[in-house]
Each structure stands twice: as C-alpha cells, then as structure tokens.
Image 1 (tube, rainbow, N blue to C red):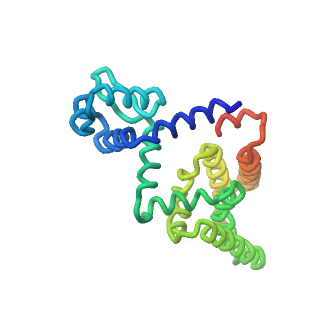
Image 2 (image 1 turned 90 degrees about the horizontal axis):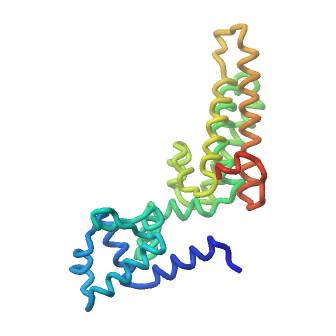
Length: 241
C-alpha cells in the first residue's frame, strides 16, 4: 500500500502529465492571478467545459487555488511544479539550475561539513601565531572541506555561495536544524575568539560558554545526519525537519 505522500506525488505527476494543464501552470506562473475568461482566450479549447475540467483537476491536486474574486493562482506546490517544468523544458542549463542540481548531489554528512569549514578556518587563522601546528592543521581541514564541497557540487558557484550560507536554502530537508547548527557554531566561535588585549574576570566563563555552544552545534550536526538518514528519531527537535 502506498503512503499518503506517495499517493499525493502520484496525483501531482498525473496532473502534470497533460499539455493543457502544464500550459495553465505556465500562464499562472507568469501572471499570478488569472480569471477564468482569460484561460478561455489563451488555451483555445473547443469547449469551455474542457477548461473547467483541467482547472478542477489542478485545484483538486492543490497545484492551484481560487480566490473569492474567482481568480486562479498557484499554490506553493504549484510554484514548485512550475519550476520543475521550467527546468525540464530548458534547452540548455542555467546558473540557477546548475546550482540547484549541484547541491542535490550532497549527502547529509557533506552538508554538515559545509557548515563547519568557517569554524576551522577562523580557528586556524587565530591560533596560527600561538600554536603553529594547530593553526596550520585547522586551515588545512578548512581548505579540505571547501575542496570536497566544490568537487561534489561540480560548479564554481559553490565558492560564492558557501561563504554566504545562502546555499542552505537549496537543501529542502531539515533546513531549520541546519540553521540551528550554523547559529550555535557561529556564536560559539565568537565567544572562543576573545580580544587577547582585554582579559577580564569573565573570560573563563566566556570560554566555557563558547565550548558549550560548539558542543551543542556538534550534537546538532550528528542529529542532522541521523534524522536525514530517514531513521525514526524521538526528540522534540525532530519537528524542525
């Protein structure tokens, strides 16, 4: 027995498996709000009942919706479907499609490693004058992580996106959990890199709090990998996926 999600996906694919319905999606993607009469003018179907049938089926599969004024628009699922249709119809790849498809190649471990490269880079730069070996090692780890992500995504755009963390929005799974990793990682890093010229009585507490945040970020990283593997994980943060 297929699950409800599988049944929904099957219904969506069936709905998109018709030229007229794909054209309706395209029209709505371009104009956003379209009245029924405009579909009659643009689709050139022999009977208005055909238009009504296609609109009804798309509404039933939640690809489009109708407002109180009788105008149709795309739902969130409909906009995603419009993007899928655009990508499928492209005669040549674009930068956007290259980036989107590139990040889809990454597994959960590689995604997490992509969030940690800045941590090792900053630690390396900061400690290279104090602990040369630790500094060089941290920088090499950071360079290795960046190289891995670029190699796996196979696009030079990774170098631009990886430094802005915009790329996490191309990852559909556990996005909030991924952001939580980055926030705790960054806050921990800020606390671990104090101003050496200003040593206060609170410095040990600041260092301890930084370590705690980094450990939390590390724990969230393992949780992200575990949850993304598809296993059932009983924990409140699972709702973030």
